[in-house]
Length: 245
Image (tube, rainbow, N blue to C red; front, side, top):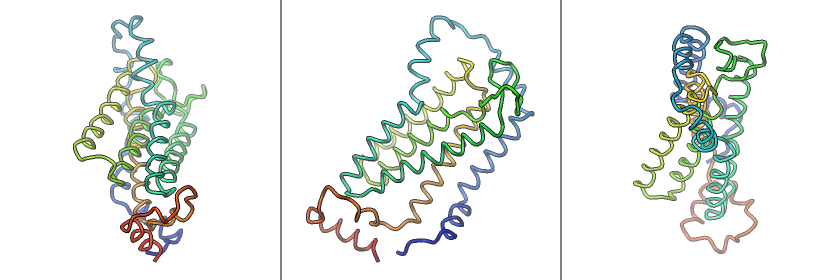
């Protein structure tokens, strides 16, 4: 399999049906969040917060932090480096780093471009003069993209049994839901911020999976410095040679 050209990579990413669907969903949610869904955002933002003083600190330090990059990135780093060492290839590290970088660029550009007010202002408008960067939620994107990359790498390299993979998938969904509920409860984000953030994270994840399928196997194994090819099994050697053809 030969290395695709830049044009083939761009067309492959742009023609992916799931990525197109997620991009349409993200654009649709952005349009709805700009006005039609303001009543829902305001309703959720003004709901009573029972036991606010008792649980606020706990929610900030624990459930809300699980989807932060300070927690999610070390998990992804550990998994990527472990798989890279086992398979003597930089590919898991490159996939993880590229996916996170793409997700950060997407979310940051939308935040700066749309400049949505913070929920504590009680004004869900876009293009604010207060320097708001509420939309979309970075934590929502982290929960789907970063933990999704962890699951993708585990599945790709068959590092866990199917029942473990299912439990990990349920855990990721639970993290996203719990973090979103906590973030809305704490007035950190509008409801539509959180939905859009998860869609943006899913889009970045899907593009990374699609890109991985287009890049030939075995290329980054030649750069691996710490374990010689004499340690490879026959099956690994065949996979490497097949990737170089």
